[in-house]
Figure 1 (tube, helix red, strand yellow):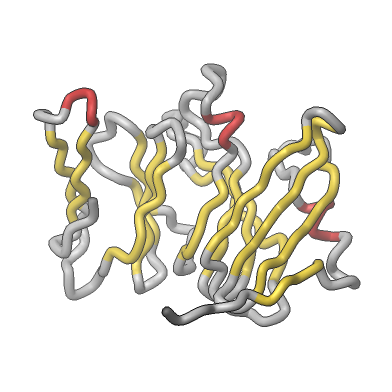
Figure 2 (cartoon, one colour):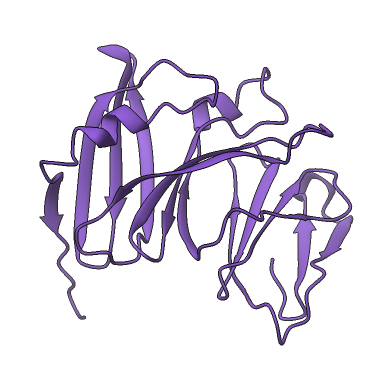
Length: 201
């Protein structure tokens, strides 16, 4: 939970009597928690604010760390569920997609491993801007292992459209980026989009 006092409250259901409170070192007048994003493994937490300032908390850390290059209001995150639930990448989020309020999709990797020469932000790369530039309220990606383990479906949702991207993941370069080639094919041709219908009851 995110409190108005800019503290994060963590409760692990298997130890419900142990409540952990982690403060964010920002005054409420300077920083307002907007959304929290926790990965499927429960190890990585991203905190975004209305001011576009973002923080990262790894499991068992006593305090969060500011993501200095993440200067955007995050509306949604597509976690790499398959990688996160494997035991071989305990400190890294692996590749994730971020949907921002300005309609931009970013690819990123966060890694909690302590490294004097590297920050937790391994990289952040803008890979696509939606034509309507509306907030990306939902984003997700999945693989098709029965057809091709690198074949990927990406879905991005705004308040009025559902966008679909398909393609094959690129081999990682030194920076680890893999989604760029998929989005590059849509630079000239717009992705397929469906209109969202809203019904009032």
